[in-house]
Image (tube, rainbow, N blue to C red; front, side):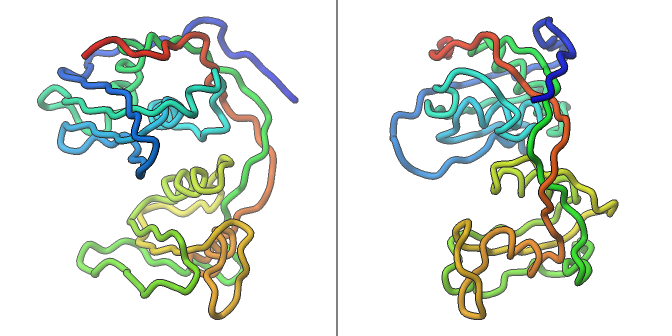
Length: 237
């Protein structure tokens, strides 16, 4: 495995802004859907989320790019926070980094490691999704037999690659060269499931058939967030 250390120092979090009010509570329900941290109109919320998933959002990486104790992928928490007035929702990453430093005592460093990835390219049958037009109604086709998951949105290609990385569990790198936002609807069955006219394809088949994209196996050197210290019990609200 190729390994290059970029810095031995703790990742610096020099911020002008941080959340004004935060609530971090352990979630012991043992079930229910997880909702990744999202900042909308100054309100951050996340439900039944692991610390690893928090790190994914805070640093913009795939789960495979995070190293730390095993519990960060098992213990679950609920988050709620309010950002200062006038702070853009796009500032979620640095503010979430600061929240994790303050409440979990997070200290980490960045390394570069070579790892398996998928390159996302335009398929041989050309792109099958259209540029996003707010005047056009969103796509919501009928669900295929055997489909267990469905996602709709209007995103840039890097954002679609990030979504596919979460689904496949491997970093996905956008190699399409396409700019702008695209409206899409994708539905798929279990990984490795059968594909046919009456069965939903798995995520790889769905990407080709429904989006006109393709995921190709490759290797790349990517940054790795290595956790040096993190407290299993966050400080009190």
